[in-house]
Image 1 (tube, rainbow, N blue to C red):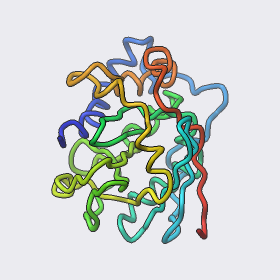
Image 2: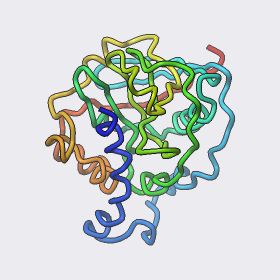
Image 3: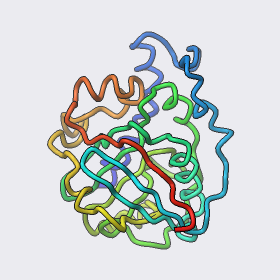
Length: 226
């Protein structure tokens, strides 16, 4: 089970080869014309409030998360900075495993994905369990959290021992999470769903062309003082 969660993060190591195959290494490529501020990860280091909510608008409906900094300060700070600055806007819930979890966090813009692919944060100690509705960062090993998170569909306490640290939980819209499109299943090599490394390399161009039924995240709005 843990290997399935780790797959998406581990596949980042293959990204440079895929980028080369798609026409060049994004490290040497020119930034997108819009000069997206998310291309500069060093500028996003705010400390999150002790508790706040994130309103996620999706094509399946709205979901509200409540984040708790005392659960996982480093993870919550990372999510806060990403969500507040539009990182998750227009992204896709690209990996949904019915009865297990739903995962997102690959940005629409592959230049942004390249900028953040090695922005690892140290693991927070696990102080809460991965119960249904809890939200944690995906990772591929020790201290490899970057941008992808997942929502637990069931009691996944076994993930606690592997260091998957909950950062918050769904407080509204778990029925929406349950309705996220799941027919594509897992990606290679365990399934024929979206390939995370290709999604990193090509962004929404790949996901929308090959997996057009994926649930869309329209925008994420931070509600401070909630």
